[in-house]
Every structure is written in structure tokens, then in C-alpha cells.
Image 1 (cartoon, rainbow, N blue to C red):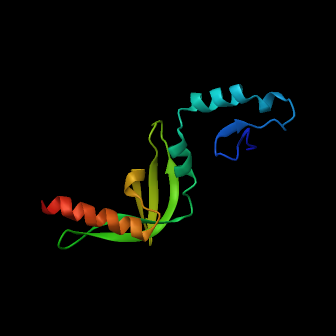
Image 2: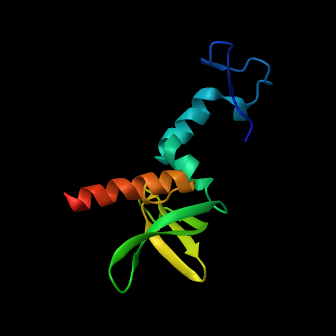
Length: 123
């Protein structure tokens, strides 16, 4: 998709003026189509996760201790919902219907979230 905007030297988004005047370059029409989709910028970012390494929480049996599991994002799907669901493949096991907030793209981020979860569970 060709961008219709660019950022000026102050980081402010402005309309590109160098594009030919064609219907597909109509900023208002493109913005309306995007808004009609119901997909916000955070969801667009989640779609780009497919194929990336990811870490999730997993319950270890026996003992019921929560651990981190490393895998790969294999799918992001909406299924008629506004909020996407994520599937992460850990080894040969798919973990589906994960909320994006429970999928971490860096080990550091996952470890921090796990530490926070353990603190909440202990209190």
C-alpha cells in the first residue's frame, strides 16, 4: 500500500503533495475505508506478528507452575470479532485463541510480565 501521508521535520503527519491526482489517492476516501473496517492501528501491528518469535505463559504439569514457552506466531485471526486472537506454535503444539496482551515478542518483555503475574498471585 502506498502511503498518502508523510511526517514533516517535526514528526507531524501531513498529506503527501507529490502523488498524482487519482481516485485511489483520495485521502478522505482511504481514511473512511480504513475507519469503516473497524481495525485500529494496534490491530494492524498485530497482523504483522505472523512468523515472528513469541513467548507465552504455559502451565507446567505436574505442579501447576507457570512457565514461559518460546514459539512462533503462526496466525492472527479476527473471526468476526473486533479484537484479534493469536495462535503461537510451541514445538508441535498450537496455542490458539490467545489475546495479543498475552503474547510477547521479546523474552525480556515476557519475563517482566511473568514476574508481575507471580507477584500478583503471591499477594
